[in-house]
Image 1 (cartoon, rainbow, N blue to C red):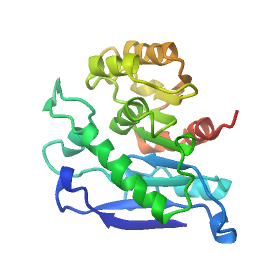
Image 2: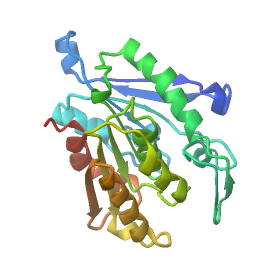
Image 3: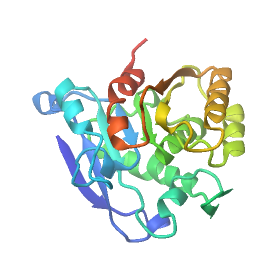
Length: 254
């Protein structure tokens, strides 16, 4: 079952509506007593339906979840499509100056405050969630991947596991490194991170940056799954092919 509705995030985009998507396993209709872990995701418009996706191709996540009867709720909100790099601003955790982009004020903290203290409570009220940190995950790609890393570090009291696909880890690199080194994180925190082999040369020093972030996570005791995807690229079709890799990492039971 997939529910879709419109909401607003006043602190970030005023009264401009954006779509929210929530997938609930069909098993709930068969047994209303069931409760499920929750995966929060970025760029919700790109996940489920090709007709909603920015470039006409979604992740095909609905088909995967239904075909595999995955015991997981997915809650996602579309990005800010406004002008002046609105998506980059909203999905950037830190204020930073970026080549070919300019200065970004970085409103990722404001976005996460809304997601954790407004959106999550609404999802918990309306849907059959397991509300605990141990059953609350976050995932995204590109800038959403960067935000997922940020969230599992800065909001580790909320999220126990994260998946960062093709994360834009060159945005605010020094600040992200400091966050990973110093954030209070609980033992057993899980991170899945990958990068496509065909996108490694899109930005200067991407392999070095990827190794750096991976090393810092391992030094903090994070349970890290890291992959370089053969032939992987920076698009929804490639991220769709990674679903069978990152979802098991999030749902793995020790």
